Each structure stands twice: as structure tokens, then as C-alpha cells.
Image 1 (cartoon, rainbow, N blue to C red):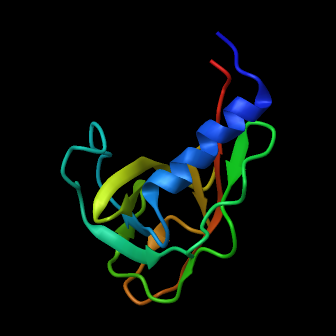
Image 2 (image 1 turned 135 degrees about the vertical axis):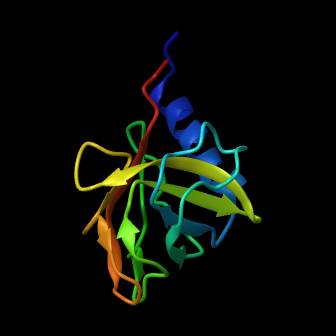
Amino acid sequence: MQYATDIRNAKLDAIETIVGESPVLKVFDGAIPENCAAPDAGTVLATLALPVDWMEDAQGGSKSMAGEWRDTSADGTGTARYFRIYGGGVCKIQGSCGLDDVDMVLDSVQFTAGQGFSVVQFVIHDNNG
């Protein structure tokens, strides 16, 4: 099954609506949980309140992060393995994080408590099927 681009974009924009304004991003070490309903695993390395309008409008079947996603002081020390985005205190999105070939690209995977970090790239794609 395939969808027109306007349908793909609407599906992607619905993600931001459902998660809500000003979600929270957490970066963890350890193994990624089986799904969003599973409890957090590992140590929280960073907690970041995302902007109110945290994603750009979807275009061409993709939706990108809006603004700067930066934290000036990491919570813990370790190697970043996965992230979770929470809306209303509930995990809504999770995925891998790292330097390349991951769901969320970070400026570094080595975290030290108190250091800053930035998300370099976060894009959600609707693969038309």
C-alpha cells in the first residue's frame, strides 16, 4: 500500500500533536527496552526539556527537529545508547542514538555528568507503506 505525500505528512504531524508541547527527551546507557511501554533501562545520562514547537512541519514524508536541542549539564556519566521522548510523563518515542546510522544523532556518545551535549539530527520518515 502506498500513500500520497499529503497523507504521509499528516501521519507524521500527528506524532507531534499526540506527544504534545514541550516533551522531555532522556538519553540512557544500557540496552534499549523492548517497546515504549517497557520500563526505562540503564542510567539516565541526560534530561532535556524540548521546545514547545519541537518538530518542523512534515514535508515530503519526513519531519525534522525544530530549533536547538541542547543541554548544558548532563545528569550522569556513561555511553549513550538510546533515547526516549516523553509526553505527559509517558514514553511516546524511543530509538537508538549515537554518532551515525542511528535514529538520533548526538554530538558525542561519551557523557560526563555536568558536561553539555547537543542533538545534531533527529528526523522521522514515513516510508510510504
